[in-house]
Length: 372
Image (cartoon, rainbow, N blue to C red; front, top):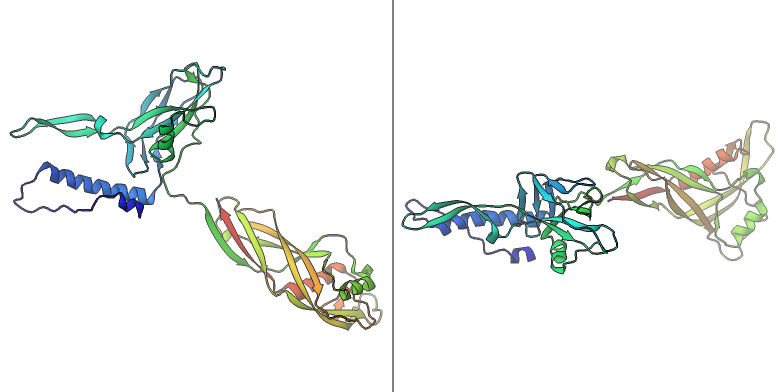
């Protein structure tokens, strides 16, 4: 692991009664704990702001307020501000064409060489020495070019590498903010919760999806017979429709859904023809005229996706699996009912629902949602 190659050899310091301790012993103990903490931060987090570092600045302000905060750089080092701080706006008038100049306000870990000495002590048989250094983050206004990229290549590289953390972006004109500070450029050090992926299987009763006006009583049986016996694939005038419940996944926003139809594609078509005219309101008696295998597939479309559900519309395409010279025996195929008797066969809606139940009840949907 690259991250471990950059870590020094791990030594756990131990002490015993009567041992004479040197400054290096105690500093080594502190360094061990610090580097283990940095290794944790670098392994489990990304460079960015962990908490706080709120930045406030309104149009016309000549200084910005920075609140206490905690951030992590690319080496896992903690950048900590314990008290609010004020940073003056860069004293620039703007660009030569009169437009505002853009700056990014960044924060970085302080170099040990420039830390303020807050306490010194006089040692035994030695001169004074520093015992406390004050760690304060380093704030810097980074000037941007016309492409809103840092003009200084080294600073640009530091930002890309996570050694400098962007807190806000400012437009400066006449030594004051030309608009409110933007915080859209900030990065979060916490592990991202997204993308969140969830997948499930949905089974339900299909509903008819009407593609065009269709009346089974006016269907041209001779044309349908020729279409089937010629072996052409054709689209049914009625498709399938269903609502998929995704609430179990707990999506917070509408994810990107994908879905597919699962189920047998080879089925058997059974054709029926009415035998006698039924009395008013009575059932229609149908006689089997043909039984042939066909292949069916569906083109699925996701409609009206929401965090908790989406609708699927399925365009149904069929083609008969017939041998050369197949004949229907002189009978015309009709829009077949799956039963020998269907009450009110002239009712297209009921007939379509019966066909869907017979031929497509074994189809279901496998879907996946990606949020983020």
